[in-house]
Image 1 (cartoon, rainbow, N blue to C red):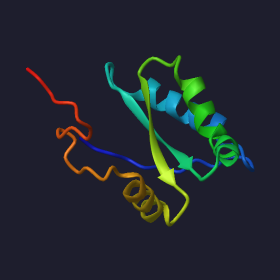
Image 2: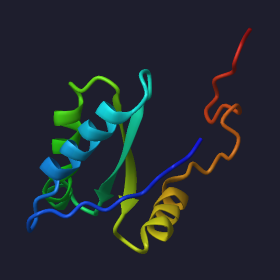
Image 3: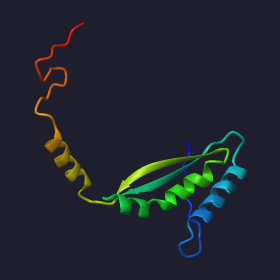
Image 4: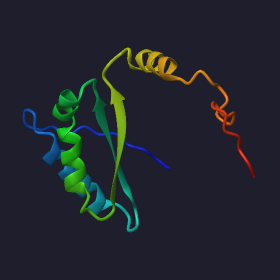
Length: 113
């Protein structure tokens, strides 16, 4: 398996159309049965409003390429908050149940066969 990278020039802020045309051209020139896979980063930012603002390009790619035969689209989360992992670990630790064993009943109820 070989992977290749290439760079395509495009007008200012024009991302979707040049990439879609590039992928279509790659599909046309590929051997029959070849699957072209586009990996699209989806920005993960704190807050719902900023999430909506930052993910429109990825949605546009997926929407246009969904109808294309022979092109698969994969979304990969890309966290823009540099402290995301630390924040998530603190939140998980704070909300964790005091009972570390999920199979042990926390109330007077008993499990039966």
